[in-house]
Amino acid sequence: MNTEHTLAIVKPDGVGKRLIGEVISRYEKEGLEIVALRMIKLSKREAKGFYAVHSDKHFFDSLTDFMSSGPVVVAVLAGENAISRNRQLMGATNPKEAAEGTIRRDFADGIEQNVVHGSDSPENAAIEINYFFPGIQLVHTS
Ligand code: ADP
Ligand code: MG
Image 1 (tube, rainbow, N blue to C red):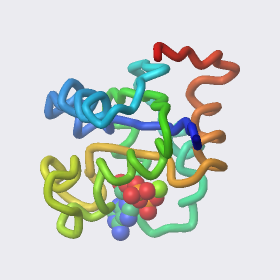
Image 2: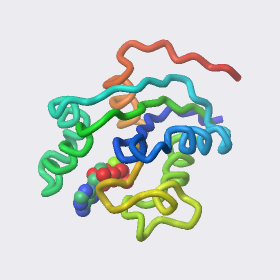
Image 3: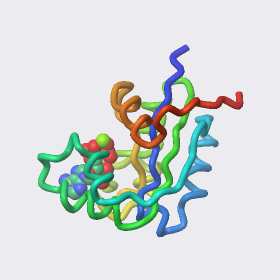
Image 4: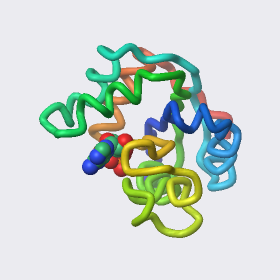
């Protein structure tokens, strides 16, 4: 068993397009367990803190403007290989390159406004979960 936790975000475009339910439903249908969930609006400063690993990228200012432009839903998903399974559900960063049936292929408008975030490694998952749910006791229902 390799039970993992991963941080997922429905980004402001996903919330604006009323995709919260659709996205959460895909996690549940995949068998990923939702063990924490909240809706928040990030400040520009919080968005910059979350995406600090990208601070040297040309898209950093635009990305953090976008991420602080409206509410987001942040969730912790748990399950066997949860990190890679969530990345599979999401699809490639650029929706034009995302596989059919993935969230980004189905709903994203472009490489920046791509509906969802998902942690890419156990190390980053731990950092990202702690960023939004500091000190959380993760509850399992199954
Ligand atoms: P992912 O979200 O697939 O892990 P990255 O970690 O590389 O992708 O990038 C973080 C986020 O930054 C992306 O989800 C997207 O919103 C944005 N982004 C990535 N690459 C670009 C780009 N070339 N132009 C604009 N925004 C980008
Ligand atoms: Mg990433």
